[in-house]
Image (tube, rainbow over all chains, first blue to last red; front, top):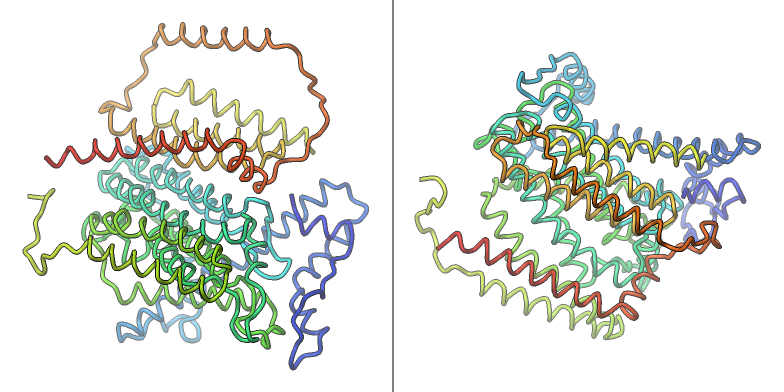
Length: 423
Length: 160
C-alpha cells in the first residue's frame, strides 16, 4: 500500500540514482537536497525498526498526511493573499497591505475572523447534511492531492490506478455539492447546486477523455510511470513533455479549461454567480463552514493543477537537462505556481460566461476535440513517435478544429439576445 | 490490523446499508446508500482488487448515487413526507432474500482458503478486455451509445 514505507522499512533507497549530472553543486549536495524529505522520513521511520508493522504503517501514513496538509494549507494561505494582490494589480489597486509586511499576514487575520464569526444555520435546514457537506468536500480535495508525485520518490499515496483514484474521488464532489444545496433548504442554494452538478458532469467527460491519450501512450495509470515516461531530453534542451506534442498541447488546453470549470473558477463560476443566484450552494453558509468551502475550492484547484503538471508538464522533471541539479520538488512547485498564476490571471481578465454557453461549449466543442486527441495520439504512436507522427497528428487536429469551427459557426453576429427561459 | 480493519469496514458498511433501508427521508437514505457503496469499495481494496474498488467508487458513488438523488429530486414533490409502510415491499424483500439464501445454500462449497492469487494489474485487465472479452466490451459500448442517443432524443423533444 505504501511504497515509501516499504522501501524505508526493508532496505535503504538507492537515493542518488538517476540524478542528472549537476553543473554547479557537487553531486552529493544536489542529491541530498533532492531527497531531503524522503531521507527525513526514513530517519523517523528508522526509530521504529523494532515496532510491529501496523504501527510503522500508521506512522508512515500519518507522516505523509501531516506533511501534505502542512504544505497545502500554507500554500492555501499564501495563495489567498497572492490572489488578492495579483487581482488588485490587474485592477489597478493596491490590495491587502495593512496586516503585516505587504499584507502577508492577511490570511491569519482572515482565519481568525472566520473562526469567531457566528455560525448561522437556517431553521429549516437539514442540520446533519448541512454540516457534513463542507467537510466532505474538503476531505475529497485532500484525498485527491494524495496521488500526485511531488518529487522523486515523493508520492504520498502511490497506487497502481492513481489517475483513476483521482477521478473516482473527484466524482464524489458532485454529491457534496448536492448535499450543500439540498441541506440548506433554500432555492438559491438548490439552483446553484443543480447548476454546479450539471456543469461538473458535463466537464468531467472532456476532463477524463483528455487524460486518455496520456494513459494510452504511457500504458499505465500510475502517476509515477507517467512522470517517468516524460523524462529525457532531445538535444539536451527540449524536454520530452507531452505538452510539446500536438495532441498533448490540445489535451493540455482542454484539460486546463475543464479544470477551471471543475474548480468553479471565475470564467465558469456560474454555480455561484453573485448577480444571479447569491452564492449558489454556499448561500446559507457562514463563518468557518464557508471558509471550509473556500479551502476545498483551493485544494481542488491545487489538485487539478498538480495533475496537469504530472500529466502534461513533465511532473518534477527539470525543463532543461543542465538544470537537473535543482531539487525535483522545487520544479514541481514552480510549475504548480505558474499554473496557479494562470488561474488567477484568467480570473482577473475574463468575464463570467452564461450557463447555456458553458454547456454548449462542453458538449459541442470540448468533447469532439477531446476524442480527436485520442485519435491524434494513436496516429503519433503508430507513425513511430517521430517528426512525421508529430506533423500527422498536428494536421489531424487542425482539420478537426477548423471543421468544428465551421460547423459551430452560427452566422449571427451581434443579434439581439433571445431569452428562452426567462420571459 | 487486518481483522480490525475488516470489522470496522463491515460495521460501517452494514450500518450505512441499514440506515439506507430504514431512514424515512428519501434523500438521507440515498446518501447513506452512497456511503454503503464506499464501504463495498473499501472491501474491494481490502481484498487487493484495487481497480474494481476504484471503479466501484467512480460509477456507484460518482454516477449512480447522483442519479438516484436527482431522480428523487425531480420526481417527488413531497420527498420529506415519505414514511408509509409498504407490505408488498416486505414480501418482495423476503422473497429476494430467500432466493439468494437458497442459491447460496445450493452452491457447492468451494474452498475459501484457496491459493492466494496475484492481484490483476490494470494493464492485465486492459489486455483481457481487448482480447478475450472484446465482444462483450463492444456490445456494452453499443448499448451505452444507444442509451446516450436515446437520452439525447428525449431531451431534444422539449424544443418542438
